[in-house]
Length: 298
Image (cartoon, rainbow, N blue to C red; front, side, top):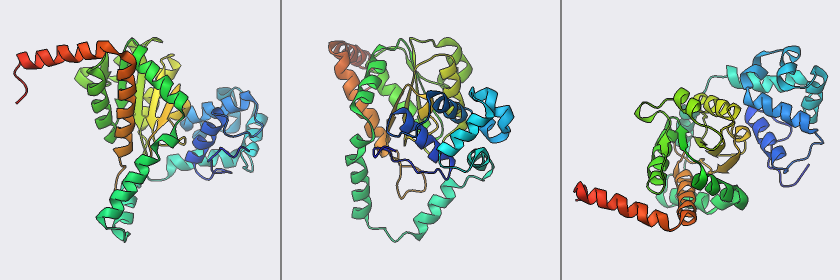
């Protein structure tokens, strides 16, 4: 097992499985699994409902390996067998979700209420941000943002606000950027229209939206490149993405902190603007001229 891995081993909850898969795919973890077994785990994470509900004989054809190989996979993960592996998927589907109320309970019980302490915690999160992704992943993300023919950005709940902000700021410096679901453009229309030259950006933090994950699953099946902006390698968006960048969202707040995600977005936009070069200045100048003609600045 590689020391670069941060995975919980053996896995205790479903997010540990996603973390292990991310480490396997990024070569941070070596469990002696064949590419076929890693691919099977990937497919289970892509379709967790099937992994949670089908028996081993029914699931095997969906993963491309035999029932015996599914058992070997489970044991390689440090589990007693396939039932223990399936239980992690089943548990995630049957346990009631209490993310927000549990966070609020911890908030009310916390003794850490000093303003300076709270601000210091946020600053530490931002200072650690560059350690959460590799330079080559940032470079690839910028490449896609510059060269994709069309870009569609998807996010639900809090992440919808991120999607709108990213769409607006990116749309200032390049054409063909929009939010999925905005102005009547729904998921079905987006997935029908986009091709391999385009890009889907998916945003999602705990608790992850099933809507966003399913959208990413279908986009992947359609051969549309995917850039994921998410919180950890345990995110279900990671196995679906061509490139993933991470922004930690832990905070004392009753919901997720979006601070690091906004900073990550701005870093991406800074690098994208520099890569696009002089046409960015011309495009922004044209935008300013139109704003002046509309007399829209006070």
